[in-house]
Length: 53
Image (cartoon, rainbow, N blue to C red):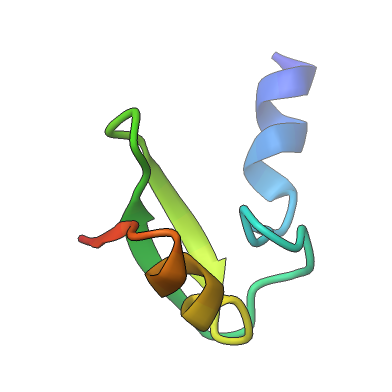
């Protein structure tokens, strides 16, 4: 139970640069999983052809 609570309380991070999310957008990767991307990495996600959710 402690691991679950710790994971719940951790701040969300960007899937690309692993920094804390300030303003995020959700994208779908090639495997169909939802990833959160910070506003700085949005152009990179667009170049990688991730689909906006």
